[in-house]
Length: 210
Image (cartoon, rainbow, N blue to C red; front, top):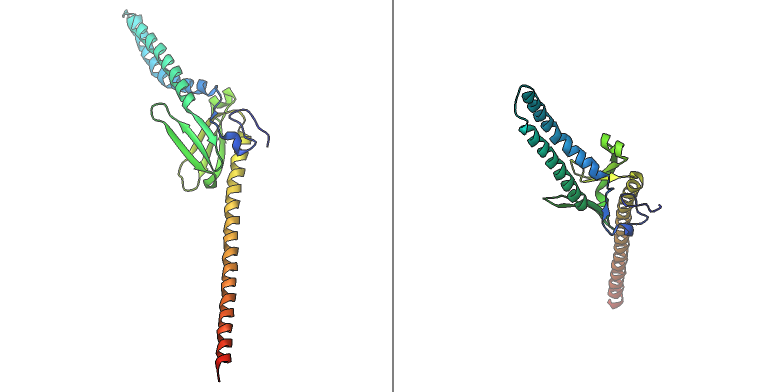
């Protein structure tokens, strides 16, 4: 499997020993989502104030709405930058790590052996920006344990995760089979020793009889 830029796929597990960043375009998606939510209410207020002005009201409230909108844009940009800096993932030898958070930081450790499925989803904003997001489903979890947005080429990473999960599961099966074979071999040896000891005791009793 060929190596790709960050937010793509590794050529080996060791390639992901360092933190992998999301694509910078994901910040535009976050800022846009925040401004859509905030701007909707600001536009409602702006419409009401414009109506009041048309009826002879004061224009000062409109200036306050403009200041609030500018402050919201600045806050969204700052928040998106901090969120981008704190959102990373890493693929280690035995598990995947996903870290995120601005005020409350979290790190999720996902063992490869628990991975059941890896999904690729794209919102409208993702399609516009040429991005995708990967969700990792694990055994026993009701929701996706790992979500990695801002991926440009998701398929190589999906392939790596699924192959690594399969390798871990196969490794466990092989290890279990080896244990069963070793236990069976040990039992056979113990049974043989028991027969030898019984034969030796029987032979010794016959030889010692008058």
